Length: 160
Image (cartoon, rainbow, N blue to C red):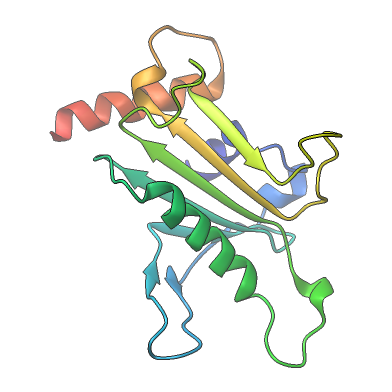
């Protein structure tokens, strides 16, 4: 199920979906006073990409900053003292939100990456944050992601 869900959200090479590993969701703290982060689901792909899947049922004013914090921490914890920076793998977050976060469009999936606003040049293979908004899925669109969104929305209604 996890593999199918990730395939519906992410555009990764086929080999990345082999050997998925669910790993410790705790984000490492360098110092005791550092903020603790505990992810809902943390996965590594076959090539070492790190993926966080979060579910948020209630709107929180700091959700954007929290997602940026989690994604950044997953990137930073890949390199320890003495390691080379080329050890850093792409870091991806997926937020499934049961509320509208992005009012600028009606799309139920928005994918945020680093890029130059003026030239539209994309920063190579670094971080990605996907926001999936359950209230925006209304009609069958025939995609796997649309099917997953309707599944989550239905499950959410039954739980509450």
